[in-house]
Image (cartoon, rainbow, N blue to C red; front, side):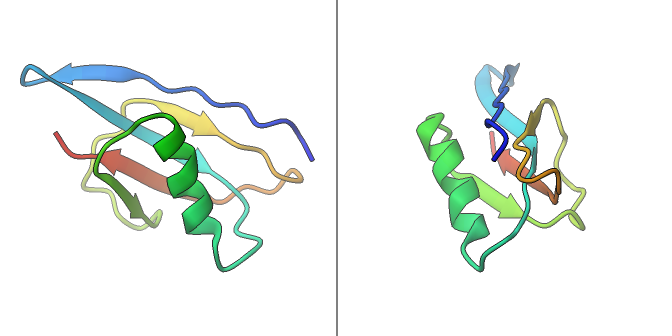
Length: 81
């Protein structure tokens, strides 16, 4: 397995900090969303929302890549401000 690479960015919006990112993972199990939630919980993100790549209503401010076996699946994650 390729070592995980995490990159996050805090952005001020309306005097509050927000965390948004693109997370790329390979959904190799039915619990892949829980894995995403765990990653962001460890980064102390609050009110995390897991969305599929079909949702585009949230602004993307940073990117995260987690390579797993060279196969990627794009998921949007966002924390409301």
